[in-house]
Length: 321
Image (cartoon, rainbow, N blue to C red):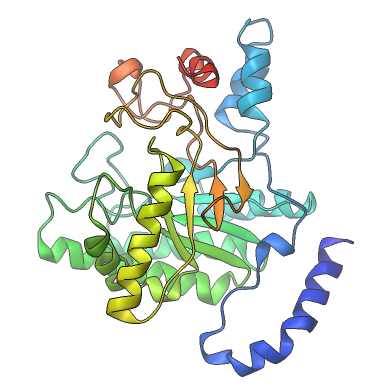
C-alpha cells in the first residue's frame, strides 16, 4: 500500500478519536505513514566510503554504518534552513521512508561544555531559524530530535539564561505543532550519568514537554540501552507524580554496544549498538550520532573537530576495539 493510501486509511480510522480529543491532539504516527527509516545518502560515512573505495576499511564501514538509517544534523552549516529541511524531508518522502532530523542551533549551544559551542546569534534569531526548520518539513512525516544537550547543559548558566533557553525550546515546540503536524518531536533529556531523573523531569516540563511527542536519551553518548530505559522510566515516574502525564522516549544506540567506560569524548573501545528500529524497551532505538564522527578535540579524536568523520574510529567501533 502506498504511503498516501496508508495515511488516508489511518486518518479515517482515527477520526472519531481525533474529534473527541481535538484540544490536545498529537501528530499522526509518522512510522505508519512510511515504509521504514530513511538512509541518509549524504552522511559523512557515505561520503567517506565514496571517496575512498580502495581503502581496506571501506567495505565494513559501508555495510555496518553507512547503510544504517541514522539522523542528519542541521545547524548554521546547513544554509537556508527551510530549504535544507524541506529537501531532506522531501527526498525521504519520495522514497516512502521516515527521516530523522536533529535541530542543533540553539542560542548559546554547548555553553558549558564548549566542544560544540555556537548556535544562533540570539534568541530571536533562533526563533526565526526553528520556525523555518519546521516549515521546511511541513506536512511530510518526520522525526525530530530537538537540541541535544540543551537541558543537561545548565552547570554554568544563571537562572536568566536557563529561563531564556527554556523559552526558546517552548517556542520551537509551538512551531512544530503549528507547521509540521506529522512530525514527532523529542526534546533531548541528556543521559543517566548527567542529571538525576527528578531534575530532568522538572526541566523537561518547564521547557514545554507537554507539547512534544516525547524525549530523547543518550544522544552522542555510550551508556547501555538498559541504563537509558531505566532512566527514561524514572523520568516518567517523576512526570506522572509531579505533573500528571508521561511521554514516550527514544534512545540513541549508535555507539552504546559496549556501554560506557565513563568517558564521553571520543573514548576508545566503544562499539556500534542496535540499528534504528521501533521498540526495544523504548518507543524507538535510533542512530542519532553517526558512529565515527568526532565528539571534539579529545580522546582518540585528538586534533579533530566535533563532527569530523574519523574512519579508523568508525572501523574499530564496528568490532569493539
